[in-house]
Each structure stands twice: as structure tokens, then as C-alpha cells.
Length: 416
Image (cartoon, rainbow, N blue to C red; front, side, top):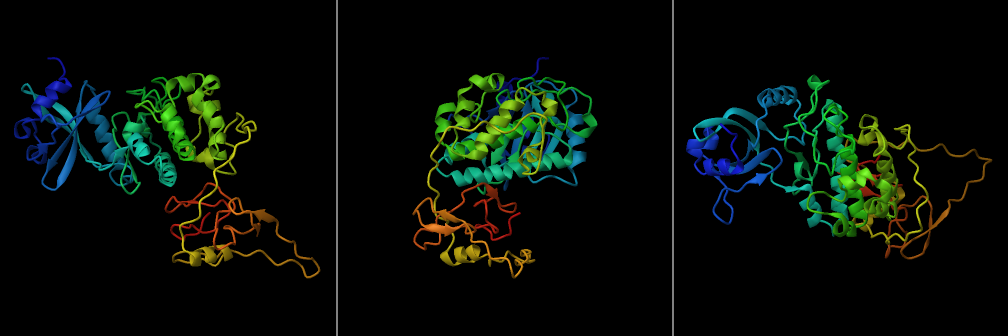
């Protein structure tokens, strides 16, 4: 008997008491489209139906092709993550006797429903608020690091499998091809989305490093769009963020790479150059995202210093949202992070016979007033612009701070 199609699953799910074996799903109701049919989100290998029952909502994942070891794979994943479920993962159950279609039982995955938007939709809705994109980028670093710490890989990191909730937290969905240490030496059951994968990826690339290229692509895309929202209009095609498979195949002639080389953000220019070099390297040589972001790291044998970009004029920084009293505390270095208090070691005073060195003057980019170089904000109370714009992210809340700041202006904690 041929495997059911999406049309077959949609017809069956209209009658949950008959088509499901799970008691909670039998008592549920499929959400309907404006045409009165069950709402369905289709992908390469599965159709996902939102189903509500009582006070809970589930995602019912029906496979559109047969995968012989799917039950074993989800069993292995459940056993591996049972006691250490990372925050980015959602609860799931695999049911071999899942949905009945034409009198036959077929497997499903019952997952917690994630209230949020796919990454591309979230980006589109927040292009006018770059700080939200930067915060999601900071949290993306945390997601990538948690996978690295567990020695696992999602295997298909892309806009459709990354959900962003209202508070900016990130959840990953679709665990069909996930890599676990026990699968070392096997071939990959899928190759992932072509607009997020290394150009030379094959089924033999299946280990804990397989997400590294995709992680860099997503992180760089978020930073680039925060710095220049016009990239969205120029390069988004409803099936990517800004890059496509063609960009990775020929970075030198890519309009997207060319635009990023001229980004107003120095970090974007550096990472774009780095990603361009990654495209010419074997996938197994691409390091973890966090490795290439470590200031002291020398992550790869290939060069990472980009050529000098053409002169650009960065937009003036915006004044901080914090109160003037808190700004003064930060300015003077007296702000105290939440308990337990962290004491910052102070430099030893110069010998008595050594004349003090006058701090360098820094002109405010907004009002042109001269300030002492160690200050964070302009000393003019009416201006208060950031003197040293940069990408220093708070490890606790993900807020973007001035590069020479000591404390986060969002949560008050000490910055590394």
C-alpha cells in the first residue's frame, strides 16, 4: 500500500476520535483554515497539524515518506536528552501507532506546540527594531553553544526550524535528522536546507560539527540585517534569510557577500569575509560559532583578516534608554550588579614620582563635545550619546552594550 499523502492525512485528521490512538489527541480538535479544512504546515518530509485539546496545544507531525528507523531514532534522542533537555528543545513523544489512514496505522511525533514565529517571519516583523535582532543573535549563540556542549547536532538549522517566541527566546523544531554520538560513522538521513548548508555537504557529513556552517550563516544574517535592514528587501526570497546556495557556490561574484563586505558594522564585514573563506574549506574544518567569536581565538588555518573596506559613514548612535542617574553610576564605574556582588579589581596607583598620564580626548559623534577617553557616554547631560559604539553583548540578558562598558545597561550585571 502506498504511503499516505498530505491529502490523506488531512482527510483523516478531521475525525480525531477515530484516527488517533493517543487519548489526549483523540479528545482534541484540529485547527481549521479559513476554508474550513484542517490547518497544515508542510515541509520536505512531514506535514504538521496544530491540535488543541483542553488547555494544551500540540503539533502532530505526520511523515510524508517512510523512514524505517524513525522510532529507534526518537527513542535514542529521548533517552539522551531526558535528564538534560536544553531550553531550546520542546517536549516530544514518538508514537508508532500514531494516526490511522485508510485502516492502516502510521507513525507520528506528538510535540509541544511552540507559540512563536519562524525566524524569517520574526525578522521581517522586527526589521525596524535592530536591538531585537541583536538580542536574538546573542541568544542564537547560546543555542549553538548548548548543542556543542551536548556533542549533538540538529542537522537542519534553517529559518523554518528556528522558532522565536514573544520574549525573544528560541526553540528548535524538527528532530528527524538529529545527530547523536551513537550515530558516529553513519550517513546522514537528510542534507538540510540548501540555503543554509555548506556547498560541498554530502550524506557523509554527519557528526557533531555538521551544524557549524549553518550556525555561522544564521548569526551573520541576523547581525547584517540589524546593521542594514535594506538587505531584507534585496536578498530575502521567502525561503532563506539573506543567503542562497548560489552565494556559497561562488562568493566572489555574490551580490549578497559584496553587500556585507560594505556593511556599516565591522563585525559583519569580518564575519562575511570569514564565511566566504569557509565556503572553500571542507565542512569538517569549519569550527564552532563560539570558537570564531572568541577574541583570543585563532580558530582556523585559513586567514580571517578581511581587506580594508571602503570608507563608510556609520549612523549616529542613539542615546541610551537608562535613566540619567543610572547613566552617571555606570559612567563613574559605581554601578553594582545584582547579588552576589562582584568586586572589580582596581589597577595599582602609579609610583609617586611618575606623573599621571592624561586620558585621551574623544569627540562625541553626536554633539562633538570633547570627553575623557575612559567615559562610556557623552558627559553632556542633554546628549548622553554612546562614545564607543560596539558589539559587547551581556551574557545574561543578551543586551547590546558599548564596547568599553563594564556593566549591562539593561540588567545591570557585570560584563565580561
